[in-house]
Length: 248
Ligand code: PGA
Image (cartoon, rainbow, N blue to C red):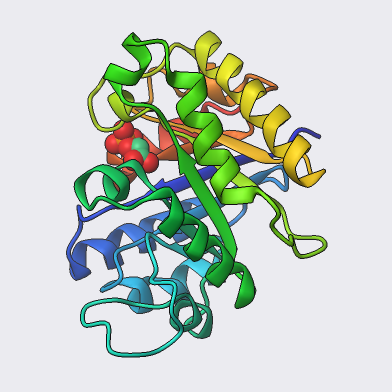
């Protein structure tokens, strides 16, 4: 059976009470998901510890939206991969476009985070994507190749651990303008080829960027797209339910 991944990135949308009540709704609705659907939620750092129990009791994984690459130390305001591991996380988003573009995270920092995440036994979900300008200038492939290469070149990948990549074109994230599914498929195939060439492992590749109930099925039912990473629509119970239900 073709496995599908539905990952919910709650970004900075929900306060603690809202996170708790949405987690309870998710847990109640999705506690008996079929085995071919894997759901994970990425709550805020603040709400992580409140939502982890109800979600994990319902077999929903929980991940971090971001980590620092050092294990412990004087880094005011940061949370390390080690800390998330000790709190029960499974996945970590790395290099999300909002981190790269609003907080100037570099490919080098993304690589440091990937290594830190692997070293504590968590699974990084590396987000890659070109800006609208880069796409207009026909540089999309080149930008993605550089991002992928710096994340995975010469990396020692732990045996049995999946490689997760999210293709999230910057111009599609949070804009209401999703990438055409045929073009997303083309980019996914390009990413797959490159990751296999660098690591010998076939990656799980998710699409992200303005996935909504009315377009989700075009991504989720494409055999070359392993799932979706959803921001805005995942912070709304009804929208998220419709997205998950669109898996055929
Ligand atoms: P969006 O965000 O669904 O709100 O476009 C996607 C993401 O940032 O992962």
